[in-house]
Length: 77
Image (cartoon, rainbow, N blue to C red; front, side):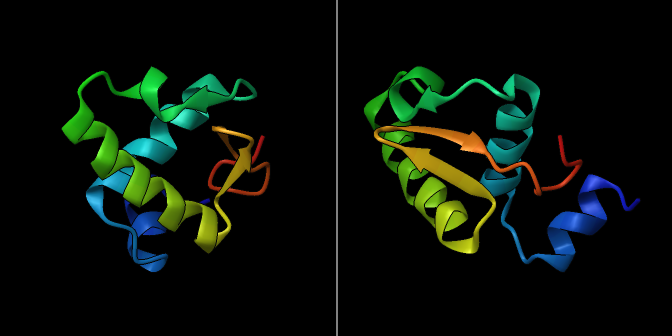
């Protein structure tokens, strides 16, 4: 199995996307809202943009206003 660095490079992820994946993977199977992940509004905007990118790429699933890592993402649960 490849490590997280190799996986993120092969999937063309930026650093913020990788950080989001790592945080969601640690908390799996719980779901989190963006507000629960980041307290300041500037950070929330940045995370929201990158979270939507991860949803579009198929690595994160959205349930209402909460998110969690998909089962088949890096490290699969």
